[in-house]
Amino acid sequence: MPHATPTEPHVMSTYGRVPIALSHGKGCRVWDVNGKVYLDALAGIAVNTLGHAHPKLVRALQDQVGKLIHISNYYHNPATEELARLLVERSGMSKVFFCSTGLEANEAALKLARKFGHDKGISKPEIVVYDKAFHGRSIATLSATGNPKVQAGFGPLVEGFIRVPLNDPQAIRQATAGNPNVVAVFLEAIQGEGGVHPASTDYLQQVRALCDANDWLLMIDEVQCGMGRTGKWFAHQWAGIVPDVMPLAKGLGSGVPIGAVVAGPKAANIFQPGNHGSTFGGNPLAIRAGLETIRIMEDEGVLDNAAKVGFQLLSQLQGKLMNVHGVREVRGKGLMIGIELDRPCGVLVQRCANAGLLLSVTADNVIRMVPPLILSGAEADEIVALLVPQIKTLLAEAA
Image (tube, rainbow, N blue to C red; front, side, top):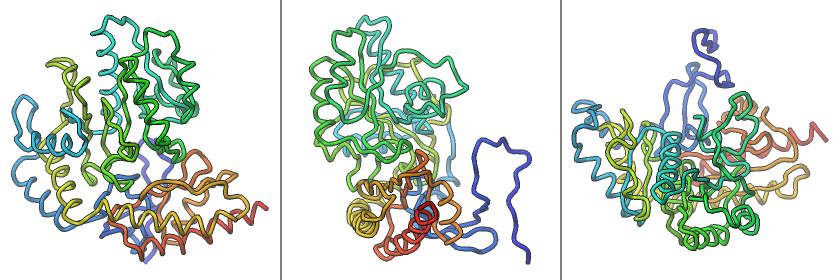
């Protein structure tokens, strides 16, 4: 039987797709329509927390589909309060707004910051953002993003942002000194699209202190690095701090679209009826997915697994690659790992897929792996065995 070649003549070409059409998955593996199996080290870009077709999640979603999928936010959904409570307890924060995507969550965070400023009498609020950051592709989140390539062609961008480099305390102090319009600092605990660059523990602590001293909101984007990916519920928790605003999405629903903005006391009551909303935000199916994701993660020790297997994977990759000419750094936390090369490496996406491994390349020269958090030690070994030869072959070609 000839292999099927995916074509999409009626779909806008907004994605540079790999020519693979996936049909189903189980655990950390997926199959394409031709029967080829792949080890999934991408997890829908940090989305499929519990892998594919987790039996407990499947049963819960089937049950929910038979009850309610969607209701208007005019009405109460008791499960919404339950998921909000679970997030509040695990974050040490106060209240939650639900939406459907990380972009929406980040957009809501930006609106919270501006409203916070206006409520204090600041007519032109400004927000500190970062080089290499990525917060979404709406006009406002695109403006907060620090990637000229994705901004190109969409000007004029939204004003009101002050951009600084990550992990440079002096730079943020200099950029904000004497500016009465600053209302918030907005950063990713680990930059994902920017190349898997973690904010250091010391830097996060210093920025928390700076925000406290100036009555600014500390807003930490945990869309990609949150929900257990680093071995704690939220990546900033390694620094022992609590933000004022925390956007979430991706892994929260294990594949069902859901986003959230968790707010601490300083930001929890800024929005009032009419200030913000989301038609699909907090719908019963998405909320059930979030509830079951957290319950399964706790029942099955998924956070500990992400920390343990992530350390194993990172250590093995560092041991096999750090002395290889052309490898600049192997970095990450838990199951969020980036391998930076000294040259573009986008061809590895297809080459690794041919070898049976799904991953991505971001920032042109960083191999990114964000596999399901249920990844086993044996599967981590398999990733290393599949990936390392591909990297060495690429680097040898260009030598």
